[in-house]
Length: 152
Image (cartoon, rainbow, N blue to C red; front, side):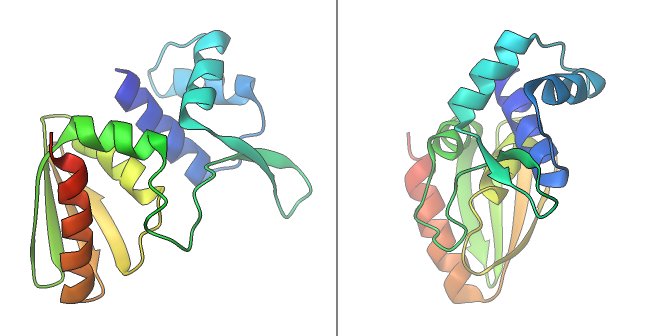
């Protein structure tokens, strides 16, 4: 449940500007996660979220990941990915990530928070993630990196 909640938090803060813990708590409750303010506070700390100044002058929660480097594998990504994924393979510019049942959305949200070089987009199902890469070289590179993380 915690991994799914963390994935939902990452999704929520990437889709809209969330300014306060109370706002995040309300949004999580609307999404079916019954959480307290203390849980939200712990989640923010575990995900290492920070408040960033938006163009409208307000502050909102964001991840601290450097958008220009694929090697900035944050704690949240590593924790979620290593627990959710059991294999990664590629064919041409497509990468398929096989996850345990129900874990693909959490792993995909964590994967999307890193902003990998050469990644065009992702699609997640229940137990599979499809990554579309710019070319086969990028696909092979990300497959190698993700397989290192998935190795138990």
